[in-house]
Image (cartoon, rainbow, N blue to C red):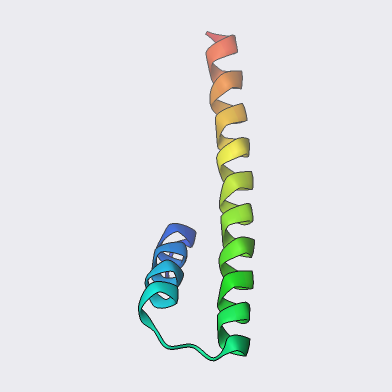
Length: 57
């Protein structure tokens, strides 16, 4: 199973190197945007958890 980071990397490579049709490119760009938003949310939650741990110390 690919991690979100792996999927983002793979889509970026494909967008830069593949001859997508317009429809395929739009789909890949939408998926990349969705994955980046999901990763940003996970990063935000993780950062909050770390901050909470720091406050407990």
